Image 1: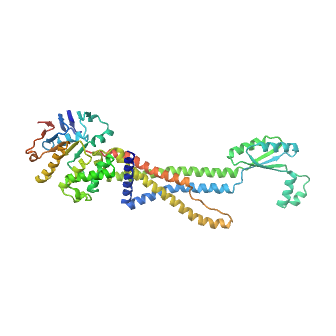
Image 2: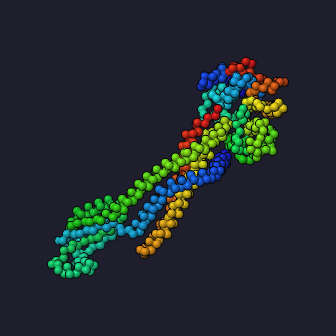
Image 3: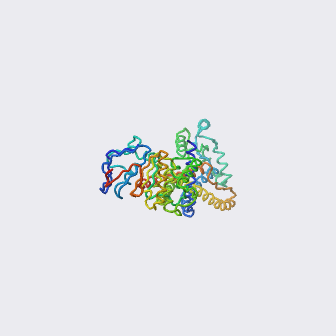
Amino acid sequence: MIQFRHVSKRFPDGYMALNNIDLNIDAGEMVFVTGHSGAGKSTLLKLIAAIERPTSGSIAINGQNIAQLKPAALPFLRRKIGFVFQDHKLLFDRNVFENVLLPLQISGFEQNTAASRIRAALDKVGLLGKEKVLPVTLSGGEHQRLCIARAIVHRPAILIADEPTGNLDSAYAQDIMAMFYSFHQVGVTVLIATHDAGLLENNKHRVIALQQGKLTA
Amino acid sequence: MIRTWLNQHWFVFILALKRLLSAPVTNLLSILVMGIAISLPAGVYTLMENLHAISGQTSISPQISLFLKQHATQDDIDHIRTKLTENKLVVHFQFISKDQALYQLQLDNGLNEVVQNLAHNPLPDAFTVDTQDVNTDAIDQLRTDMQTWPAIEHAQFDSAWAKRLEALLNFGRILILVLFTLLSVAIVAIMFNTIRLQILTRQKEIEVSKLIGATDPFIRRPFLYFGAIQGFAGGVTAWLIITFVLQILNDELQAIAGLYAMDLQLRSLEYGDTVSLLLFATWLGWLGARVSVANHLWQIEPR
């Protein structure tokens, strides 16, 4: 489903974030991307959503080379992907419901369909009673859940999460991971970047390790 | 499909309205500025329309006087009469014989004694010709033409007043055009800045929207609606200002007109003009927003 061929990414300041990456991820697969900070995990994920563009090589999603997509076509690629951002990127002037509504508005959903979908998404992440609450009053863990709800509400085929358990204690982190497993079980392709080794104990899924922009496993 | 589209637009319309109301004082002020800016040229236009109407009311349609040669015969007179009847520009004409003219002179001007002392009648036969109210050049052309007719001593067209009025109206038209152009640019500039500030305060929202798949038109839309709504409100304000000012002027004018036993009344913008005014104001607001969005949105690329 996702194919990297000789992908390199060099930033304008000369920093080589990714160096000649070859990678295949099948549909419905669950994959962890590990490595120290600065190893290129975030860049790898951002390339898939075309938030960053590769310096060389090709990235195909469902056989379509996204490195060659025109800017006008990018939004439609991003709608197929749910992205849980490292810094959440929540809108603090909107309540929980409206934050989750945004992707549906963008895709042009009708009000009624949207409302029931939003409630379903909030139910999945355990925020159902807090629709009218503003994000400022939520805890760090709840921010994460809200960000996940927004990433899955439009039912994307690919779910990408950048350090989703970053600042959470381990009990909370297990909760969040359980959610990702459940999405994987219903057939979503899930990619999770993490430097949290504890998260990978007893893990039976594929792990991709990055070191200084290169694949090591 | 269409329903989804309508839904989206309705939603954005409401969103833009909410944003407008979220900073009522600021937005009210810029609406007022736009209203005043639009009301100036539109007000001058309204006054001009009124001037046009008043000059139409008291209209003496353009008149040419034909003075015949002293030795003109009855045949000549009949000939001219036929030519005048055939001419399409001529609405109405009247023959004044030299005897009639002399008699009139005696009556009107109290020159009885002078006239009595004249050895013979020095006045010529004459025609007064009322023409259609076409432009001055056409009537001047007709006059020159008449000058060449046989037995015509002199054809006179008193075009000065008509020319003066026309020049005045032309001046007014140019004034309106200049005012409209300058103030339209000003309005676009105001809107440009308003939207620029909005984009800056909504930078995060725009960035997130782009990240999760919003197209550029989707991001532009609320700003465009905002500009259009504010432009429309500016147009309404301009209309109110004009109507209000005309009301005040009318009260004063009534008093003056009463002294001259005339009925003068300034009318506000006509229905069609009002619609044009509102549409134009809306378009200006939209245009300012469009230019601003085009200039600033590309700078916000998510990283």
